[in-house]
Image (cartoon, rainbow, N blue to C red; front, side, top):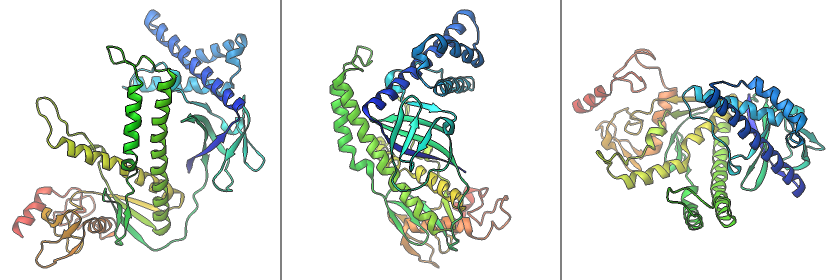
Length: 417
């Protein structure tokens, strides 16, 4: 399996200037290659191939020492990146754009194991054109052989990313399976009755981010069309960097916490079941249009912010990545009526759930418990219980795990009950 490894770099001032120089060379090369293709298309109706530009790049490096000062593989990666952008254009995407200095923050080594070499006890790495750069590693682990690699800058800091390929390491079997219900009140509820807390990192940093955003807006000068006029100004650049650091701090805190939660789940259970949520639809704006305005727009906006802050999709992604490396199983089950179904008797009723509490309205059951834990148990039953009564691919009005079961049948059952 493949995974990405990111390490922090600590270049000296001279080495940082060399990295900045490579960024400048590759960015101007991107703009030059893009301009050549666009001009040839507009003026001569001619499509320039990447093979032709590759040979012209070789000739350019022979006569221009400035372009030749950057490592050749980095420039070849720029040409490959432009090809990918045009493939996206031909498949219905937008046209590639010219890159300003603020939107070009990485240079790539397609054959990283040939260009980037580890030195010593993997505490330094040799970058062509830069030198030996110190590396920070959180633990004394051996970094496996890597393929493609890149060096990038974020919030004034430098990092190196490596694509490594290793064999999965199977964890010892625990004999446990679990259903996970993701939410806002609790980040995740397990079918074992555990509630994993939602730290709400975004809400904790919302005030700082709002202040930094107002400071940036005060230092921004716009023209009549709303375009920024002082994008390269020192005061505005400092304000933009301060805001960027807040968002980067939020990203690292949120992702670090989700990594810890995912690791605990994968180590504890042999199989993990999630409900198949449509998060794009759940976080869609309720503003509506001028002819048909939405209702409760502000409340829906706060709900969308809370769901995005919890990063429900990222939790599942990290669990899947760690489960793949540990040879664990991850299952997605239909999410319909999971919060309205009783985990004890299977009765479906919307009025059974009231906030954090679930109370079954079936007179023969009278189950009472936490609503999220009840939903997690329903998810576990759908994933690890008996198959659908009439087969996995056939509709079964009496089994909610059947994806083809008609919804109106369930409501008709409630009315009869």
